[in-house]
Image 1 (cartoon, rainbow, N blue to C red):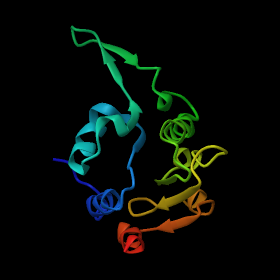
Image 2 (cartoon, rainbow, N blue to C red; image 1 turned 120 degrees about the horizontal axis):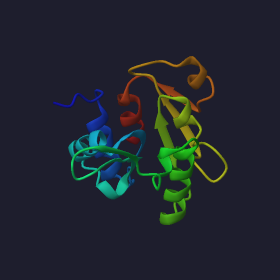
Image 3 (cartoon, rainbow, N blue to C red; image 1 turned 180 degrees about the vertical axis):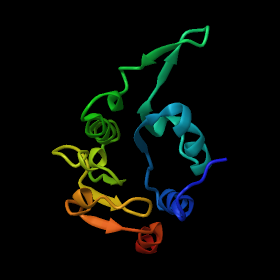
Image 4 (spheres, rainbow, N blue to C red; image 1 turned 135 degrees about the vertical axis):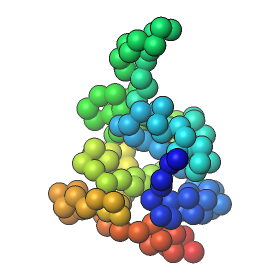
Length: 143
């Protein structure tokens, strides 16, 4: 069973109801991210994550290096690709770590919201545009 942070399902529903596209950009693995995306109603085409590769025998081959998140700086590249492909003028990144914050580069995320509801990372929080401990803060902002 998958345990999600409180309020994330409502936040994603609210964003989608307001016509805002939601993407998952993760340094994690698709094999674990896809079920979460399914629960949240996020299509696989809106996921940027590492993909583990296996031989037909089940032997591990490695990572799919075509995924931008398979290398350093990959989240910033993924965000830039999303903006360019869809013509988004503004993109907000929500995350809890340094690699999430790195997506706020020229041509990347315009706003970085540090989510500290699971783990507060001071070095990330001090550089964020906004710090939230609960997704309710973002839900309330959407009205």
